[in-house]
Image (cartoon, rainbow, N blue to C red; front, side, top):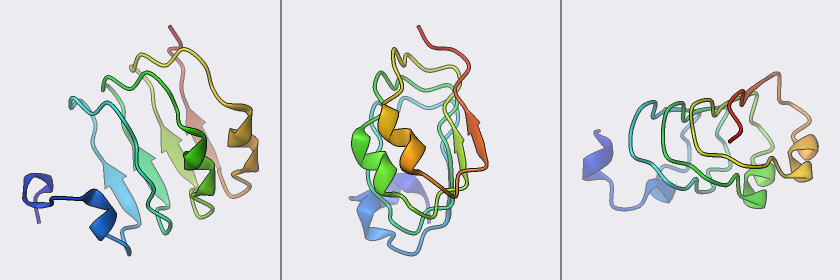
Length: 89
């Protein structure tokens, strides 16, 4: 299933891995069972605090975005093993 065919990404309730590198994504939505989220090279400006509700997240890749700050709530992601956000502008 291609992303363009999905009206709401939140319909993918059992999604575990999501790779949307180098797109024009500007925001992240909640997907509770998500384990890996790769949004490298997009236009994300802010990491929403709601991302901290993704309790199964083990990999979060946000390099090459327009992120200015990282919310302290990211520390609540106790299963997170890989967190890459090297380019804070």
